[in-house]
Length: 231
Image 1: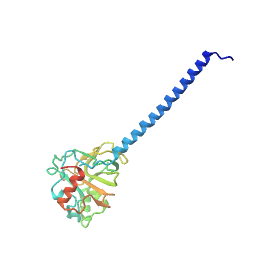
Image 2: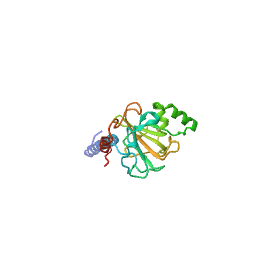
Image 3: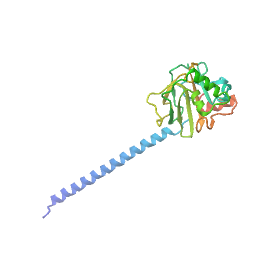
Image 4: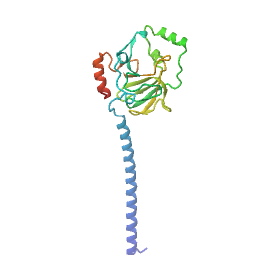
């Protein structure tokens, strides 16, 4: 077949259109891949520790000695492993049902959804059992309803005596700093005043050391203020 000059022009235009189309397709795939990579980087950036915060919005650190890590707990021959936020020692009202948030980004490793208060007989048996020291299993009962979060730095934070976990929260969920975890209550206290027990452990709770362990009060508060970025 004899090709006329016009045929060459049509062929050239078709080839150009094909090249342009392939170029846009490739560029689209590259753009899609770039967007996915940016999304992953944003997720990773959100998990990078930016400093811990307190788990009650607007709260300050407790100041009473009995509400600080290391405070004696004679009934179980031990010490408190965390901060106890109670009304009158938190700079905000501490009431049943107020929101508790994640101190740092991480993965939820424990959520107690079906917690039931022990009977009076079971409670008395527990008090008898722990009078010479509480095991990790006993401590679980004493803390009431809990949520635990494992953080990228290897620490684990514990939020105890909750009234309920945040709806839909489950083990394996990724949470960010300030995300809701549950509601403040008084579980595990046999009717005591609402409070939040907040612990930060180096590793697994009750099996390692807790944050600020062994520090005297003034040094503990100095380091804690810097750690949680509060005045």
